[in-house]
Each structure stands twice: as structure tokens, then as C-alpha cells.
Length: 235
Image (cartoon, rainbow, N blue to C red; front, side, top):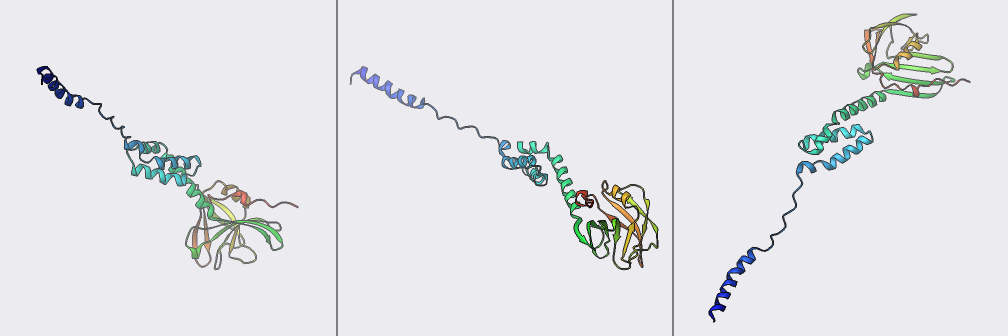
């Protein structure tokens, strides 16, 4: 081989590996999304939806789970801005519904007349509970009374009982026993009582039961719905 040709061959041989090594490098992989931005996003969407629907009782536990399970996530950061308020609203709704379920309402015919009643039991043991009854009857008028069991209440023709609305001071109200002998105790000033019950959460009533002695009856009345205890239609 001619010396010049041999030199060119050597130069090409030396340049080939270099050319291969200078080929275009592979494209870098797309950067991964930080976990803090992706964790809890599905749950967060549900939390937002339930808040918009004002379903706070369902939203609160989902929000608490996001914060507990993904504490460093963006979802947890967002939830923490509203979770305290959502939990408070959920608690209020749960309490309200529990109190509403304590009341029983009835409307219909009774003893030849039309009657509407609203009643609630005292919050003690089942065997000794006393019922507070609000009644409107087309013939008997409006009444507020306690209905117990056994021998009823000590009172005589007339007596005075102590009542406390929420945490206010005890006030005295006149009461009387029914002439028909039922184990009941009627509160004389039914209008004043009904006026106060609408804004109360709890009513405590001091009574004396025959053969049992003094006792304080406690009624959680905060769920009372006056619309379900309407005045009777005239005529």
C-alpha cells in the first residue's frame, strides 16, 4: 500500500471511535412529580364536593384522614385551612339531629276532638322516665303536663314547682293534678312555658313523686320544632 494511503487509513480508523462516542445522547427522562403534590388528591376532590353540598358530617372524617395519612401533602395543607370549621359544623349537625329525634309529634282525632301533641321523655333510666307533653285539643284547649307512671305526683289541688331553663336561675310555676286521677302534673301557665321552650336547650323540673320523694327531671328540648306542633285551625 502506498504510504499516503496507509496514513489515511490509520487516521480514519482512529477517528471512527471518536465519532461514535460523540453521537447524540438520549433525551433525559421527564422529571417526576413530587409525592407531596399527588398524595390525597382523589380524597381531596371528594372532600371539596361534600363541603359544597354542605354534607359536613361526611366531609369531616375524610378531611381528618387526609391530614393523618398524608401530613406533608398539598392536599393536607389545603384541608387544614377548613377542617376545624367543617368538624364544628359536623358536630353541630349531629347534635341537632339527635335532639330532633327525641321528640315525637302526633296529630289526629282524640275523644271527639282534633288534637296535636308534641312529647319528649326525660333523660334518665327507661323504667322511671317521665314524659313532657305539649297538647292542643279542640275541646280541652292548650295544655302542658308531665305524665309519669305508678302513683303520679305530689301536689294537691295546687302547688308550685321549680323550673330551670338552661343554666338560668330556678323559677317557680304553679301546677295542679288532673281531676281524672292520671299520673300527671299540669303546668298552669302553659303560654309562658311554651314561649320559653322555643329558645331553650334543656329544661330541668323539680317534682315530688308519690311514694318516691323529690326528683329533678331533665329534658333536652333543643330539637323542638314548633312547625310540627301547630295551633289548631278554627272553625
